[in-house]
Length: 249
View (cartoon, rainbow, N blue to C red):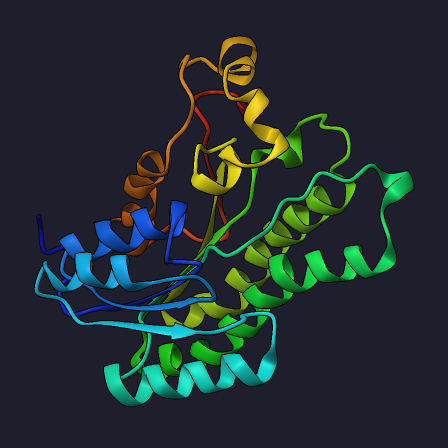
């Protein structure tokens, strides 16, 4: 445990499980108080954070819905004083061939993977500007650089995440706010283990990665902590690839 985030408030979307949960725990270990926006069960994560002596708010929130995001931000600001570090982690990744992709499915994945990042940033940026300090960290994916079939909709959202990160960094830099993204590869979580992607856990590391093992959520927490801390104060608009050496650029 350390104090690199002592006194900061971190908001993590999708923080109840998987990558989000791992980031929540790491941030709490480093002194941050936590607010989680999720639609899943959050009790275990809250218990883990509070055991570290940190405050933890867990609020049911569909981050793709403007009214729910506004209500969430109001509660966080009222009880924790605002948000210093925003982690836009929530996302879905269904495999669907383009010929089978419906416009409704296309719109829904953009709502969850892209609109949620806009809405959450929109809700908390004003407070960051007032304090003259802020960190926005968004999750994208290495699929942006790879040839993966049945992922046209998903890859398009991940490209949008990178573009949003770069553009927002330009606007917020003068206010002491950095905006960066993290691009993992296929991460072993309960969700990915239950999906068709599970068949790729062994093949991807062996054929594409320099580090020959499957990525797990804890592999991303160091990068997230770095971007959230003052160590990355002069780094913005960047996409940090954390994928075991799959993509090299």
